[in-house]
Amino acid sequence: MIGAVDIGGTKIAVGIVDDSGKVLSRMESPTDPDRYSEGIEMIARMLRNTATIASVELTGIGIGSTGPVDSIRGEFGDVDFLPGWRGKSPVRDLAEIFNVRVALENDADAAALAEAGWGGGRNRSRLIYVTVGTGIGGGIVLDGKLYRGVDGAHPEIGHQVLDPFGPPCSCGLRGCWESLAAGPAMVAWLESHTPADYPHREGITARRICELAQQGDAVALQAVEHEGFYLGLGLANLISLFTPDAIVLSGSVMKSAPLFLDRIRAVIRSGCRFVPAEKTALTLASLGEDTNLIGAARVWHYRFGDSA
Ligand SMILES: [Zn+2]
Image 1 (cartoon, protein in one colour):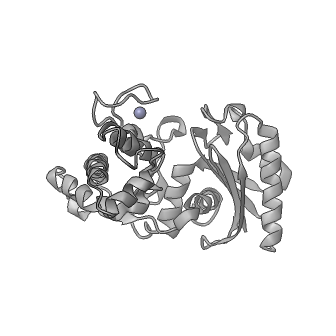
Image 2: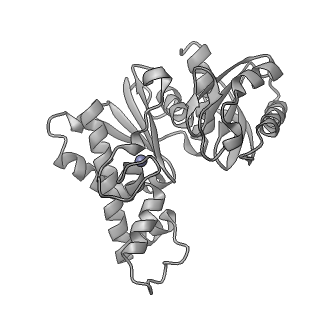
């Protein structure tokens, strides 16, 4: 049984996942961004506890982590929100503690591998996984292999520029897909397009905007229209660049996918004329809330198991 570790900026989820991708036990805890050694001890404790709850013995550990990671060396890269974890190797440390093989990937790549192996992307040889939440990330799986860039780098599909005069982004450019279509961008758009007396303004979230749109709120419907347009543009670019068999959509914003899909499809139809865009299936992620945790386990299978 594989121990799965999903490391996010605010919380760490740990669980036991069987070899069909089923989560047998899980627990989670907040991340301490500064103290790595306590973090790794906490992960080890949670791995032992979840293994005990599931009555299994750990035979390997897979890790999916937010931010840049060096999956080949098994180290954290320059993760902005985990400054104390930079350069540390959870792969080496957990292998020493548990005496099993450990593998690490970027969390979006991990989720892409899970959807490709156990989820909505099965039997699709060219698959792009896209997650839209507080940011936009993704992973590309071609003929069962995770696409890696130079020196193993993870490509950042959320930082494709859609509007060079758009909102500034932490990557250095303006108008990235993420800065125009992630959840916070929906909120920013609504805030700059509503009068001060708009009744739902205070503390509004992307999720609330989607709820209001479902109830017919005119401004929220415009925000959804705007969101669908920019989601569609980014996806159209991915289709033109990769002509994949399928794009699997995930993340908190995509929980409201039915609100956006017509607009997304219309944008793709209006462009992408030189590729068979109608053959690219747009599907929703099928592994649910635990996609990232299941993905972490899949990382181990991908590296060391029969599926490698
Ligand atoms: Zn950017």
